[in-house]
Every structure is written in structure tokens, then in C-alpha cells.
Length: 124
Image (cartoon, rainbow, N blue to C red; front, side, top):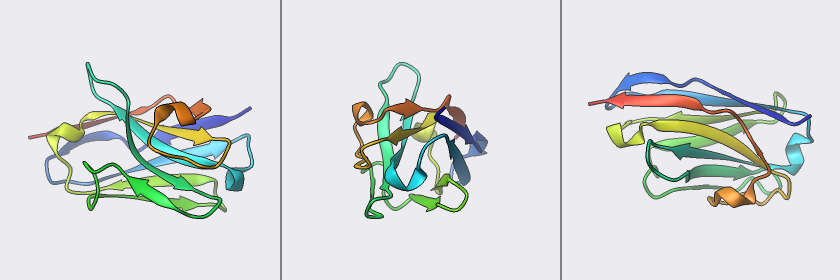
């Protein structure tokens, strides 16, 4: 059974940092791409970043470039999202997702499996 479990969310002041973790199980980690998405109240799901394990490529939404960094520990089947210089507009539920084709992308419909999400709240 494929499982994705996010952790690391919380409340932080603007300018602060958080590191989100995504623990993956139930599939061959190296074959998949893992993406991070977020959804703020009243808004659609937005692609934040992804990492493709097939070629190690990464990409970021323009809104987080230079502030967020995605990384992966293949030995532990973990993907991380380091979030620095957080802004109130980063407040959202953050989800990790897995793409069985290994391509990734910032479109949510590329992904087959989703975690339950972790809340990130940035206060001004």
C-alpha cells in the first residue's frame, strides 16, 4: 500500500523557517517523482516544488524560488522541503504527492498518490 505522510508543519513568524518531511512507503522510491503542493483556504491546489528521482531534476514555483529547497534521502525514502524567509502568503496546508511515471511537474493531476497534508501558518 502506497503511503505518504507529511510532518513538520506549524506556526512560525514571517521571516522564519520550517522544514517539511514526507515519508514514503509502499512503492519503489527511486522510480517516482515526489512533489510538494499547497492549498490555502478558498484557493486551488498549487504546485510548489518537485523532484524527479529518474534524473534528479527539481523545479520550483516562481513564488518560492530562492526561498524553498527540495531534497531527497533515497536511503530513507524521505523527501524534504526546506522553507526559509517565510511569508504570510505561504500559509496553507502542504501536501506531498507521488507520480508513478517519475516525471513530476507542478500540475497536481500528474500525481497518483497524496498524503494527508500538514498545516503551515505564517504570522505577520
